[in-house]
Length: 415
Image (cartoon, rainbow, N blue to C red; front, side, top):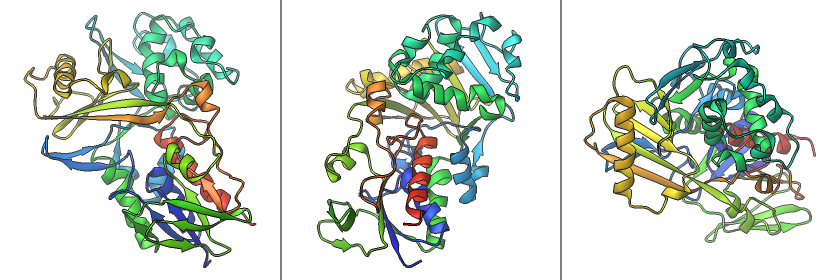
């Protein structure tokens, strides 16, 4: 095919669309406003810690089929590591308790009948209310569907949904919570195995994708910010990059894979989420203890998840709006004191870096979820992509990749 698809945005949504379209023989040009590809899933060398770190810590699960297919296409599926079965280690900083959740592989939840596998202090019957989330009506919050208290909630549901929705779970959209649980816990341990990019997000998700696209003949133009779209006759007819205008031929198309606020400025009248939540990540240059699990959940602290990487310990705090304006050194000391207590590392603060993303994800409330547009637009050669579009999932890696796939499928349909 001679027609060209211009993909605006080189995050995971844009890259997944580019991979799909180039795989179908389309000519692809990816335009990225910044000097790097990857968006929120990028790695970079940080002078403060003297090593390469990730912009944020992102966890995948073995049930994230679109993400795993993306990795297979770029030959990077073996760059994820994780336990052979679904296991999650936790520590409660208030009580000092430690435990491991161990899900059985099959969909039948036999693990809830074993005291050594389930949440401490719970009974099998305590898990039954979770089924209500799977049948939640549209427009409901999690707090309107289930009681947000008790050991199952505090020690399983709250950590899971806080990480997935990036919002205080009672205020989160029950529809999105149901999607998360329906694709993970409800599918059994085979869908819940935790996977992390041991060598970094860039080396796992981004660099192999760029190499694959280069081999396929796709073009990547960095520091090439789209300033405007020109519309005519139910199609996009030109792309305005300020110093350059690209006219589109009849068969050309556009995938707009930029943040929602950028999309709204380019497409007048487009309804998009307008409220956001922050994520705070901390990175410490120190070797984790040999016995430390790759991922450790933390309860009753500022810290929520601790990740062990070669020569580095990293932390993620979701719904972190309360932490974005405070003194960075005070926050680093608070976080490290909890990490040291949870892992047994020395209390002395190692070299550190704090990364605070104010608009990391859209606010996963029912009202904001309802604002998410679909892939298709009223212009026949313009598709939308991004974890903020209506993927049916919260703003996750899996959702971003699905959105790019859907945009590619829409543009590949016969006109």
